[in-house]
Image (cartoon, rainbow, N blue to C red; front, side):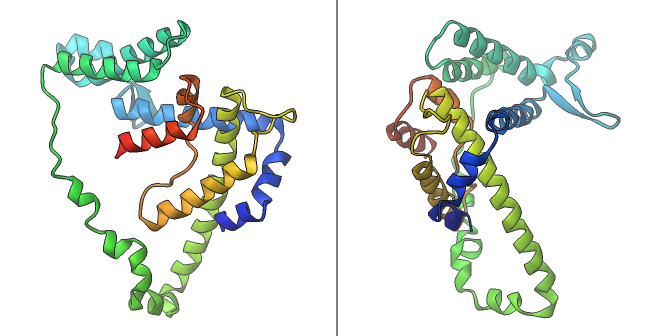
Length: 245
């Protein structure tokens, strides 16, 4: 469905029909969402049974005489300050410098060495044959698709497909406008240059990634930091992909 929307040009039509306020607010909203997840992962934001979320209690840890549980939060805040200051000073690569500095500071604070255990890599591919696209050739999957007990599951799957399609479509549109704006690659109407081709490559990557069982291969709002550091071509994406590998 996602690929068809791109091939027919419907996604490009929808993109150019979006109001300007949505084009600007979607990447900001995605950025805040990612920041919220990051704050949870490092413990700056914690669960609270009354208000659902709360800030880390650094003073409480200090009073208790044990700051070990809040070290990740302190290091993350310090790293954020480093990134912000270097960004203000127009230092290229401020984000990666902040990440590397935070990593070194964390291991100095905790006085331990990083773990380089690679034994879990095989686990990532263990279920590929059963859950990946090879499951398409499993006879039971086709039989169950049309049996009474699984009909409800089919409808749920259709609803999930529609939901993910819409979320991914508007997520990509907003991100594309945000990163293109950062790169000064908007045309006279405020739309990304060659937006149709960008969406086509995005949809092909999304479908290919799902076939191989990965998380969605899509346009990521984090790319804005790479664009700001000077990455403007496909070579940037290839180098990033190789580093992930």
